[in-house]
Length: 221
Image (tube, rainbow, N blue to C red; front, side, top):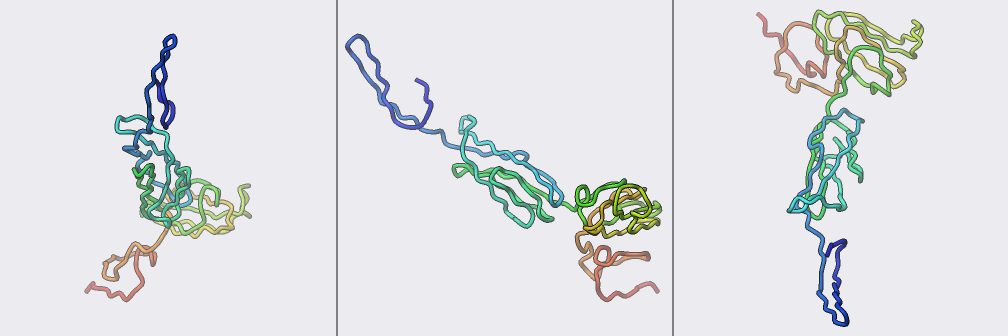
């Protein structure tokens, strides 16, 4: 006898004019574990990641069961009924797959968007926003905000060149952004200095990124 579906049935055997039967009840195996793959994923805002859920019985048999998906923090990540995660904001969220009362999770981390040097399409390759170059203090960084890709100087909306990190606001109306010798550009997402007691030395600093607004006093004699 091979079980093909859940439910009760009778198995009858007949030899000449004599027969006998046995009652048989087929039950579905219970889900013992649910595993989500990948278990860890790192995204930038707006990007997606497909997750897969695998349900198995106590014996390790692969089971076909309905799965429901949920995110612990919708401001960081949402998840579709098919397990596709969309990064909505910075932070970490747990995405859970549940089947027959058993659950598995994946940890989703959303980081600031970053990109390297070169010419990139705004809106397709680079989201509009405020960016800072992560390059050496002595490196000479050159950048251009562009209204097209023909290479003509008339497409240049704004540009700058200088040593050390640069800060640029890329607008939604920009078509392209080009940089040379600027290393990595990383999205500026908020103050990195939360206390007005944190010391800083001489130099040029970006307010709300390197230095928090507030009342400051020099302590050098």
